[in-house]
Image 1: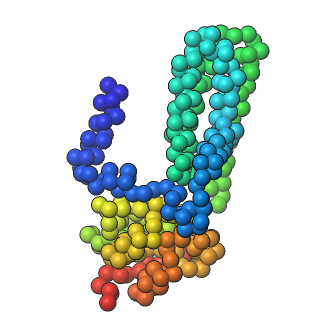
Image 2: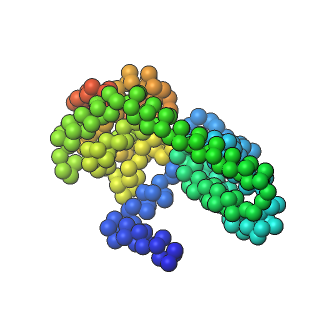
Image 3: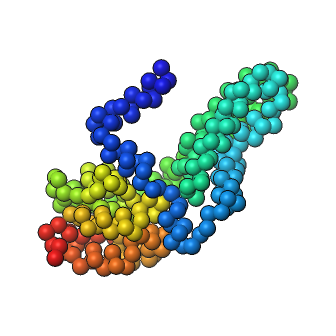
Length: 287
């Protein structure tokens, strides 16, 4: 049943989208190799292992310290014949940490690991131990729960969406509505910047090279050649103003959007929206 539940969505995607979807997701070159090569960063085994360890410790220190509790009480779990379940969770966390061979880090990459860490909570709660041990377990779980709720409510819901982002989201929806009216059905749009990828979804846009590169955006995925190909084939290119890129260091981080590519795009007619978003109309204007 588990195998069927896993493969059924994959089969549906194959029926609707064919092999293009899997090619653009699994074989698009996503990772640090291109960006590190551009900046001259050498990925030695020591550096890779250090990156993996750093992200694992970040997960355990700030998101799920219950992992430490499971290691602390591992002898007791073994005596209670819970070692298989615990080791399964720990090996799963270590296995998904191997993604940091290809990426530097980021909280969203920890999402695959957190469910296995949380499975340790009921395992620890099933332990028949003394009061001191149970109080220690409950304290660790309680602190993890409270800090997680605080971080989610304050740092994300309130800070990001209520206090800081109210006007930004208002302008984003305005931009989305305008772009959706400008771009006609069947026309393609390339968006190189990570900060603008939301427009693909809010404006219902389609990329120019779906079969080869999909919805590619950002330095972990887009190379100079890939960016050039998408720009050349797109009907529109949506990007930040140069002033905005310089003020947010986007110009440095998104190395693939080179000066020559920017100059090529800038020669076409464009509209600049209120939130420093530029939509360049390449369709029908190529020389």
